[in-house]
Length: 305
Image (tube, rainbow, N blue to C red; front, side, top):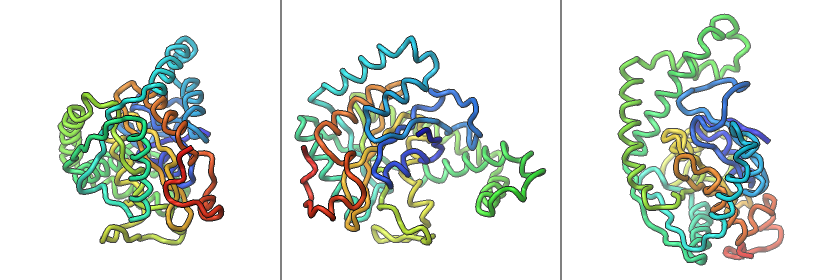
């Protein structure tokens, strides 16, 4: 399937449902035919069972992909075959998870270690500011695009969407420009952290999928809205414009899927998917269904093929 991603709308459902999904770098896939939300962050990309299927889907979506398919395949194969990688593990305030998600994520990191990869801690500061700036930019741009439609057809918008679009109208020009200015400085700092690394890794979501009726959720000693919990970490890749792929990496205490995210270099979607495919060569999470681990009595760590 094809999804669109402004703050995680490919990777959030991928992680929650136990499939794979990639958000390409900003601007890499043409947006023709896609209803915009926020032009600074919008991206379209494929969702599939495996990273191997993702590269086939993304190859067909990129402009001029027919002529570049052999190059994309070479990048994918080369990255998939690399044994020793340098992967930055994002840490710090804003990357906290529920205990079961944290256990699954740590077990996934061991898979990279078993392949001979170096896991390098990367302390990211200012994730709260990233989230606030992403919200300000996203709300303002969404309200700007939808303003004519809201004027003529407000009754056709769902109440929660109308509320978000009205919220964007309260973002001042100064707020928007300050957020964009902060974005530039933050992206430059993260680019320095990414230099010399093959990818960055973090949990896709801090929790497994919550019940539909829940509007607030508690984890890591704090309570927040479900929407904020689900977008706070995924929005990092939108904010920076970098490609990011979410992969299944285990199951939580209730048998629901857990996802991890790999973030790559600008223009490095196919190398990133090669790293993702290598992870899936050594694991079987992408071939399992939610509840499978509990139904079969699998224990933690039994995911390695």
